[in-house]
Image (cartoon, rainbow, N blue to C red; front, side, top):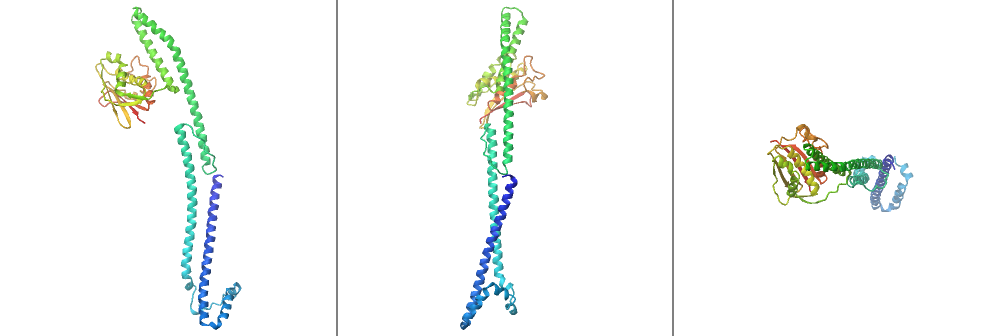
Length: 397
């Protein structure tokens, strides 16, 4: 049954309800008027018989004759009461009130039936809307849901369109996931193929440096091969993230330990620039995450601060916890981000004007991806007093 047929059926049902109620009201009014006439006739007959008992038989014959339709039709012009000043309204006052009351009662019954019918239709519609809403919520939450049973109602076209849209979106998502996986696989394959020759170059550079051969060229070659190794490892990690195959543990991570170990990972730069690192020890502040990959993320944040902090500067860290999230702040005393570059600092392979010569533009992007995989959120900003600031929040739920 389509929408038009449903509306027609509801209209026909409403008309039938009105006709039925009108018939019931008419029957009730007819019975009421008949009972009233019988009562009046009984009172008049009883009065006449009481006044003229010897004429009782004649009186009853007249009453019986008056009840016959033909007799009433023949004598309807003989209006004796009008000659004595009686009018129709003298007999209709009581009936009129009762008739109006009966009409109101009938109207109320019809309205109640229509309201009940409307409420039933609305209830069914709300149930169907709830089913469709629940279906979409389950698709959004779990990625799949059982197909609802077919229903021939006003919302059936909407249900069909929802199924078509969900199917198209699922196919598009699967195609995008497959394309991303293929790209990640190709990237990982290229990175693996580069590792062997780069590792060989690194060994040669180390041997040349150890034997005193090549001089500064050997040192430069070793640094460049180290940079290539770092780039390859970063590309491998990014490809695993893109392919969705990077597995992270979910254990309790102590924030102080995490920041201490992450700073040690860039200790060479910190010592070379004589930078002071302040990490307060707040006990019992933790979050649920992966210690190793979190160290990778925070090492990149601290490294970025160290590379842009002048010699003798400071890197200041602090962290707090509330029922909603654990927050970590890392800030430096450098010049801060260039304002027009700030919206792009987390883009892959983006290198700003002040990027170090060994920077490859992956560190901050990798840090952001790793933090977000652990239900975290990373932002960067400039401090009013100068310096860059990274804010990380790990949400508890």
